[in-house]
Length: 61
Image: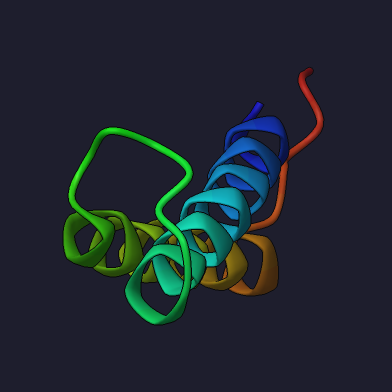
């Protein structure tokens, strides 16, 4: 369960980070602030990767 949440956070963070950086340096593809997307994308990406790295799913008994 934790691994699925970490994967969703990582993929969502990557998408938000890419859209945010494209909005900052190029054309804005969404109606939201590109700085907010970049910051939230970075936070979600880092949290997802750290959850994948340090959390282990324990088998149910």
